[in-house]
Length: 202
Image (cartoon, rainbow, N blue to C red; front, top):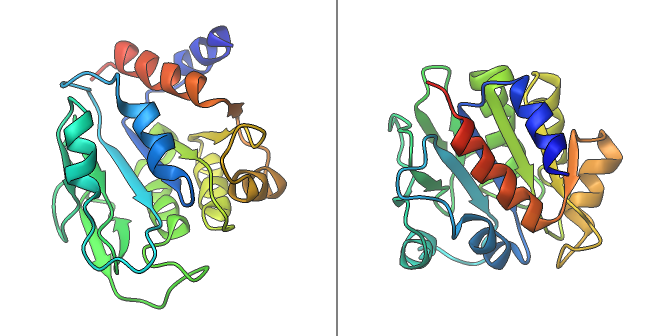
């Protein structure tokens, strides 16, 4: 399996990672990120559906377990390498062409605000073929269209193996809409992120 990533990574220069999940996503993301180094060379922008939460404690929770810096994304903030950003609750998070974050209060999409589709579609526009999009466990179709946009822009699209996901609806929705480049178990996605960091070239 690692030969598959090596081949794919040699064909691309990935500059950023976007990742989305809903139910079961906290545990899945902790497993993915816990071995990443403090100086991971690219930004990771994460969106987790958190129902009925006005104040997210996700940055504090993840910072307690991770070595790389973790923070909540802010409006008009320039995206910095080596940082794990979380979408704040109650706002859609998008990435502008100048690689700044943009927050908005537009209507929920798939009953979700923030919505994974909006983040991934905007990131695909901003980063084109230098983006890695990952979709994990969840009980909502949000993210399927966004991951399709990542692939259509030339980026690398990855879905968690539905047979392993805590809730398989979200990964199955993405696979049904468009076959991703890779369908991997969490341990393999973690290795992909590590390999990506090791092969990163400015």
